[in-house]
Image 1 (cartoon, helix red, strand yellow):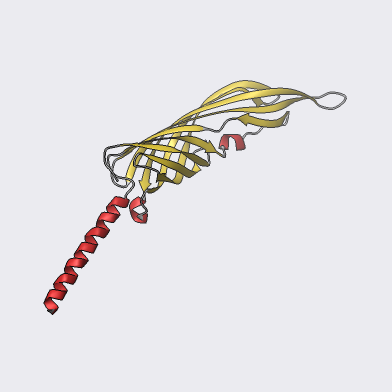
Image 2 (image 1 turned 90 degrees about the vertical axis):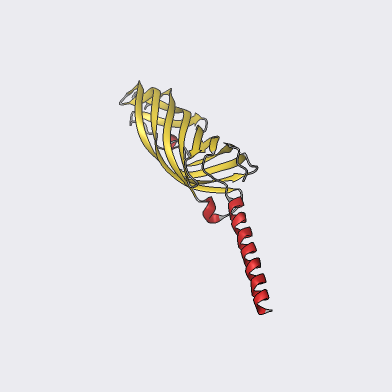
Length: 211
């Protein structure tokens, strides 16, 4: 009788273990071979925050719109994806050029249209299997962006000039996706890539495997 009871307990234990293992697999939100495309907006733009003018100018309001980005990713393993990101931002740096006069400085308004387009490569590590929360895909990533920056009237000394340059900036971010369905998720990350400190967006996943 004891042997039969032990056999039943062992059978039940193995069955429960198999169910737990299946639950862990079903909770996975990221897997090898998946393609993801994310589109969104960036907030807390570093280009806006770091803009300065020389003493012969007075800084005015900065207008424009939030940076936009599109990122494509491919899962090369069950933990790692590689991505390519395209960023775009346009700002108007409004300022006043100061001219000396007997009655004090005379101000003349000037606007510098600033446009930057960036292309970046990155690698992302995904933690969904560690947290085991169905639909949740937390990640951390590193990479770099190559940026094309253009100014139409950049204040320099006591005048303005057209200016164009290329820069390389690092990307270090952590974030999370939450899948609303098998194909669509909401996206958010925080960190640094020069374009934004915080980004929010939507991800679409293109693969045939069901979670």
